[in-house]
Structures are given as C-alpha cells and as structure tokens.
Image 1 (cartoon, rainbow, N blue to C red):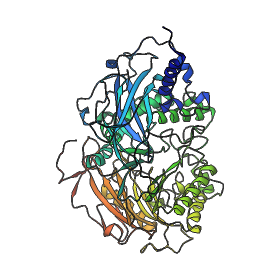
Image 2: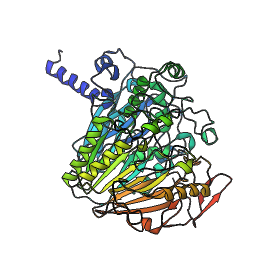
Image 3: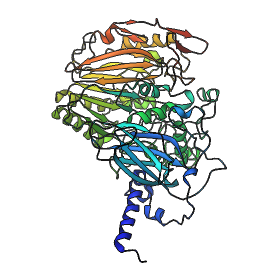
Image 4: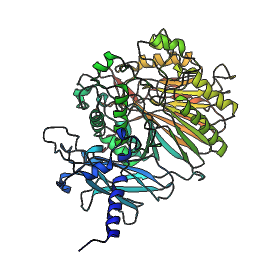
Length: 624
C-alpha cells in the first residue's frame, strides 16, 4: 500500500526534529561547515547494523545546566563504549569508564534516546518529554533543552534508550525564577581548578550530601591538559592517572580527558543534583591561553613541531568542541564558537554575569619567558582581559542590572580581580600576578571607573584560578578614600576560592605554619585584602537574600581518599548597600590563614606532618 505523502512528510519532520533536538550537532558552530556536523550526511549513512539496548550504557551519569525560568539544559552520554562498572558506583549511578581499547565496538549507527522531566521522582506527571539521536560524531553525548517548565521549580529528569527499559540515573535540577520574582535565600556553590591526579573531587559531593545550595557555578579549569604519566600529583599512588597519559591536543584527546574526569563519583553526584553554570579558564585548552597562543603554543615552528603538528587555533577548536559536547551548557551565539560569556537574572535578587577573561579576545599574557615585558606593559590602555566586544557587553550588563533594580551583581571572573602584591611571599622581583587582572590594570580601572561614575554598588566578584582563598573589599585604589579598618570607600567585595584539588600555589606539600606565614605577609602588605588562606583545597558557598550576602568557605582535610569530610574555615557577611565586608570581618575569627585585625583558631584540627594532610578529630565517618 502506498504511504500518503503527508505521512511521509510527518515522519521525515519527526526524524529531523530528533536529530536537531540534540544541541551538540549544532555546536560549536552551525554556520561554518568545518566547525559543525553535517546532519544530511549523517542521515545518508548506510548503517544497517543497529545497537540493541543491552549494548548501550549511560557511561557518565546525567547533568543539567544553564537554568532559565522556563527551560534547562539536560545532558547524558549513551555509548557502546564500555569498560567495567565500579562496585561502589551505586552512590550516583553506574560509572563505566571511557574505553579506547582493542575491544571497542566501532560503528556509525546512531543511538536513539528519550528523556522525560517531572516534578516528582516517580514521574507520575511528566511536564516535558522528547527524543534525540546521538552518534560517534559527537562522542555519543546527548544535550537537549527541556522546555515549558515552571519558574524556580525543582524537577527530576531521566533518559532511556528509545523503546526500552535501559535507563539512566535520575537527576535533579531547578529552573531560575522569572526576572521580576521576589526570591530569597538563593545558594550557590562556587568551584574552580579540579586536577584529577592531585586528588579526589570530594568538594563537589559535599553540597549534594548537605543539599545546601540551589545552583553550582564553576569558574574554570574543569579539566587539565597536562600529561598523566603517574609522576604528576599523587597520580598512580591513588589510582588517578588521567587518560590519555600525555599532553592532549586532538579532539579525541580532549574527549577522553573529559571522560576521565567525569568518572569521579562526586563530580557525577554534583552534576546529578544541581544545575551547573560553568565557564572555562585556561586549562580547558592549555596553560596561560590568550587570543593568539598559550605558554607552550606560540605559533612558532618549534612549538608547532613539539605540539604534534596541531596549530594554536586548531587545538583551541578541538578543546572548545569537546567542552560543548561534554558540558550542560547553552551556546549563546551559534555563529561565535568562542563566546561563553553570558548572564543569568535570578529574580530581582541578583544578576550573575559570567565573564571569559581567558580565551575570547585576551591580549598577550605572562608566558613565563616574557614576564619582564608584561610587567612593563601591564598598565597599557590598549590591553584587555576580554576584548572590546565583551568589555562593552560587560559594562552594559552592569548598568542594566542596576537600572532594573537587581539587589546584587555577582561577577564571575576566572582570575583574581583585586590587586595583590605577592613579591615577598613568592620571592618575585615583579610583584604582581600578570596572568590575572594585575596584568591588565587599565581594563580593571575601566571597570572600577564604570562602577564609580554610574554609582553602581552591591557588587560581588567571585574568582578562581589561584588555588588559594582571598577575601577583599572591592576598591579602586588611589582613586577612593579607602579605609582598610572600616571598609569605607569600597564598591563591593571579592570572594576568591581555593581549588577543588589543584595544589597550593606555594607548593603541594607546604606546611600549615609556612602557609599561614605567607598569608600574614600578604594581608599586611595589601590594604584591601582582609583574609588570605593558601593551605586548604575546597570551595565556598554564597548565600544571598535582600538584606545580606553570606560567604561560607570550606576546606577539605584530605583528598587522597574519597570522603565527605570538610572544615568550616571562615564565614563572611556583606550587608546590602554597604559595599564592603561587614565589620568585624568574619566575626573577628577564622579557622586558619591570616585575618586582618582578627584571630585564628585551629583548635579542632591536628597536623599530620608525615603526609602534609590535616585530619578533623570530631567528624564521624558517614555513608558517602
């Protein structure tokens, strides 16, 4: 019997919709054939061999991200690539490892996946559902937008192989409030710098175990591009050697490195528990990246040969494509594959303005061999951390946020924004970190000038990258009558967090005493720096309401094993309208580090000098 043309048209449209609903086929650019996937070519493939549901595995859990008031991004990976299941993987679902071994099934057959979203974990009332295809073209990743959702609502979601009972773990997510909603007590967990061979990602799991936040913000260095030869970090001694075991350059290299990192159980737990708002730093591509190169990629013949014949631009595009495939993130502008800077309005409470101060259009940075040169030009007016297009967007976003009456402006920066003189602490002749905002002082001054001249207050900068904790009043030094003791003359505050696992900038095995001595020098010689702490790995939570913002810093006693332990290091308060840290800063006491005009207490911890780790005496082991 002849099938009616309308039926054929419907079936064709449905199939096309299933392909295009997977956003990763459109990324990193649908307008440039060399940077996208040709769907009509994928559809034309002769792929008679299909995978059965039993051959497919949800290899890296589920994730969600970039929440809007009516939609959220959902992510999973469904693949015939399969190694083994960790016996302890029931914490957050099965965790088969990425496998490029000789037993890998090679096929171009597409995989069909269905998804559903519900306000109940039993999925008795489904608010959103759909299906999407994936294939080896995009590393078997699935990224879809769940739409028609209610604002500021917790949802459960799950994937399954089409027409089968092969299901993914159940994930939880949450939409954003509408732009005018009056919402209070919103919590953010803020992370940066997770380096796989240096230790377990325990920091990711703790807010999930506490159910203490609404959203996760990751400020970059989600992966590292370095070799994983077993001599790097703890590496082989704790069974965490990243794949491939070499510096990564190719698209498959970056995919496999993401897959290794996503095998960490606490990272999977966090992704399955909260919607993420991530941004890259430099190591998602290469160390100290900028617009035209990186510390080891300088567009010279020598670096081209050394780096396996992969050019600066090609390596960056390999990294960007893998990042968009693996992260639950929207691509803001499909014709601008490097644009990751974007903003989120969380009701009338705050605007979250996410910057890219690394990849987009950054002027040349400190590449180690040119530090003296960068020192000389660090205040040049032509230098920019982000390029003119992003910089203008940034200032307009700050103004628009103030004009609409958002209570707070939260500015996500990869690198530390405030001036930090580190000369004696590091023994450097050149006193500043020229790879951070200190290397782009005119750009920082333009930002502070915009805030000052437009009377924009209640600003909170959140920063990563430095592997240390820094808490400062946000000050335009030499242009404001600033009082370090009272905080008068400030424009807001900066909270810069330590690393999830990357080592202290003063050395992986630094003692607590030496770390605190260095912190004492830093707080003494930097007027706006109120607290410095460089020993602990960890994270911080930022909780906001209309009266105040509270930052809670947590340190991890040990990361050489997977465990739920953490220490409350310090708590800070910012009162709305005061544009400074509330005095006495941190209530006059922190657990460790150096607090200006305050006290330090280390009564609940003991130092094990044999391992360089701190262990908390009063914690009880719990099921993780």
